[in-house]
Image (cartoon, rainbow, N blue to C red; front, top):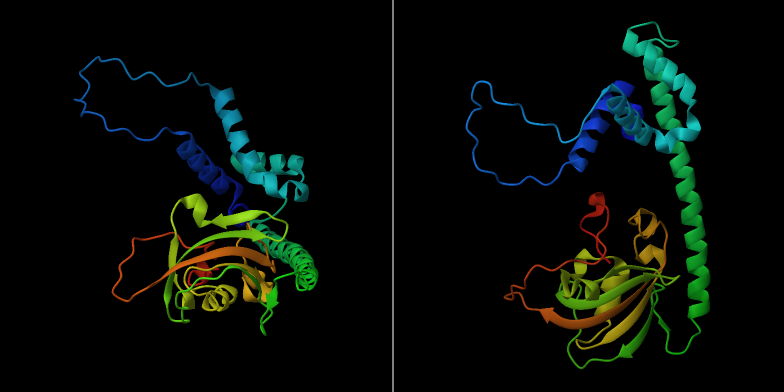
Length: 274
């Protein structure tokens, strides 16, 4: 949506056409070199028969896809009038300067709308998490730390406990409190290896409670998880549940094969993990 409103309609059309063409194209294949066509050689046959109506329909479809997210904020008839006038070089109801001002105001309006929607979701997730943890706290086997992290020791190992500066190897399953899975090393078929000072607070604290060979279930409050900056599949202020098996503490001399890390944060938070 932001990309569309930041560009002119014509520029957005060109961009969407290029993207659509790239998506539709088949993967490139290696082919033998072709000698230059001899004089009189027949031209290559187009993959489909095209005419002006088909091209126009394709262009309209591309523009339509670019407008889907703002369809409730526009009058398509006015869009058509502005498009036609612009293509013909005729005077439009807005000057270029006025259109720029409208574009900027519209972007600000959309941004404010997204922030408001995000706050509603964040407040809902926060309340649901608080209620869940309050009810979970009294269940059999659940322990609560001073930070608010809750955990159940499903299996106690006999190995050493990692320190905050250690790198650990684990298997894990991550779900939201409604049971929806968002990440799993089991699904990838290999353990994850990462430093405890590079993960979210709930993971760093929880793993330091576990001797090697243990399996714990961690109930992580939102402020010990991703907070308001959670990945989209998790959502802001979400309380999370992780089933974690601590397999090993990597020695400085160990060189484990690269392994996927749990639920990476958005790019701006690339250093954070579970």
